[in-house]
Image (cartoon, rainbow, N blue to C red):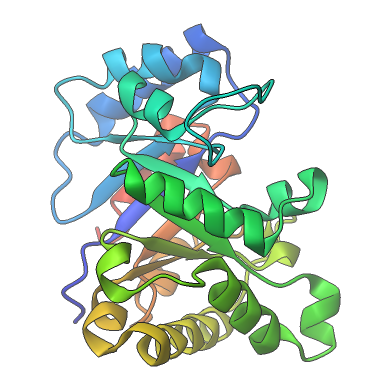
Length: 253
């Protein structure tokens, strides 16, 4: 049994106004207050972060952001810095989500800069990687993951990466209703952990948490979490309803 504490993280994407986010966070707080041996994080939209931070006071639910920019300040219209996220109450930030890569042109190089900015502000980066359906069908899954990890973590050393979380999200399973089988997910997670061992050594690779993301639901979370290299879930649609999300938090009951 792994000694890594599972992390169940909810990415709310572009859903919920401030009022709706507070309502959902408050309900979730009540539903998961008895959770032990598992960490919970939610990532609302930027405009709801402060309100949700207030609503989560007194709970163990962590607050995350869905993105950040790597500069501390400047003429970068529409962007947000790591310091701004910390001030509003964030402890985590999602970086490199496939939707950011696909729709907003994020590259491995820019993701590397964002991870560095997050870590310099003591934010925990949730570093997303994953292949498209075409890449999987072409047998390129491992080469894609290899490049994303190597380039995303380029020029880091073991001591830099304290707290890093990796999230494997096969792009073909995000919001499609398709889920990687437990064997497919475990194979990818095992590959990533082995690569991290090569790059940063066994102590780091053994400690880092690798989450699975891609149509995670209450009816499949348990079998996924039984896999030795799956340490939690980064959840999209199923995190929007507090009742549903709480069932994921209590995956082992």
